[in-house]
View 1 (tube, helix red, strand yellow):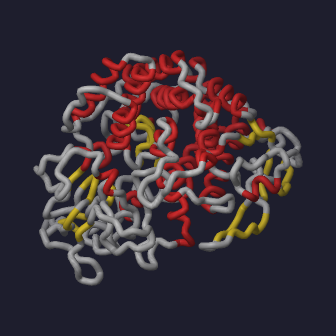
View 2: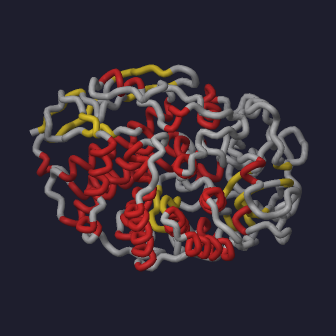
View 3: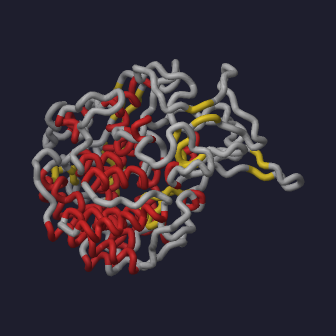
Length: 520
């Protein structure tokens, strides 16, 4: 028997947005299956994977919370473009409010995952299905706890009129530990690298990765980023053991950095992939100029950029990143007959070697220098960031390249080089600086960067920035190293309460068990 009732999934609400106003329309109408044994576990698992990918694919919502709030990426307002009611400026300048639409959508997306996972776990899944479901619940719980510091929890078998309870930090941490236990991970498949189908679902390697990421941040998840709590030695040993387990699954660092993203499902580094209808197109279009139409149908959207300070973290001359100019591999390059990779700086060209222009006819020369205000940008200000290359069309008769519809269908959410750096950090935090330095330098040598002679906290956070820019983890890394509140371009010192996002107004107003985070 099914009961149809207006309910909230973890006090979620369906809303409509304009650029400046938030208007609550109506509560979502959901179907709750009272006979949970009839739930199709396989279909719901597929929904979990697809929903998680959809929540992370584009440039807004959860991606915006995780990356645009950091120091590596900003979305300046260019004339009338990219104003959007100030939503992008709020992220970069840390001025978001409890009515921010991206915060609400992210809250809804991630809390829905935990609800569906709870429903599956009450539906008699087999051991592998249970392990996959627990992996996805742990992943969603980890992100909710990281972003908001509290986790709503609804029991699908409870009466629909009951408000979701709120897991404390301690309870949420305990749930993640339970969901990622050795017993659960043992029931997941060993996928190995270069396996597109296997890398899109839970595997032993992705569970080890998530557990390592969790234990690296556990002292913050449990106590709050402002508590001053230090990482425990036992937690760091767990990080090291889990990264070693990923290595044992066959993953390794690849020495051709940008090939990892050109072939995101066919390399030695991708541990977990997300996919959807738009693939990696958002990561490409949002940074390219309108007149990059030679490589992307319709051209780019000309929004996202980075700062001169972040560009300067990379080795290489400040006035060029042409191929062969001596920059480290990860900073990227701009050839004179194609679109570049990594950091797009300087004059841009088409396939024929012709210099591109802005819409006003000036040279399309991306500059490091920025105007005084985040709202005062022109078409070409800001170095652009691109990892996933557009896939051009090829004329079968002439072999000539033409604009394509987008990029690779996958994005990498978990990557082995991240795990490698997590292990190095855990060694460093455990007092084993010499081995950590060896690991960092092994990575740097592969990336054509000069080895370091010593290793500090600043060296590690900078190395993570160079290796993992626009790969989802910058905000979390900055918080762990105590740098998220520091001033950067267009942003003064942030208030301490910005370490967490506000609980959306619609959620607080509909669930008496929920309390707003301080400062909002």
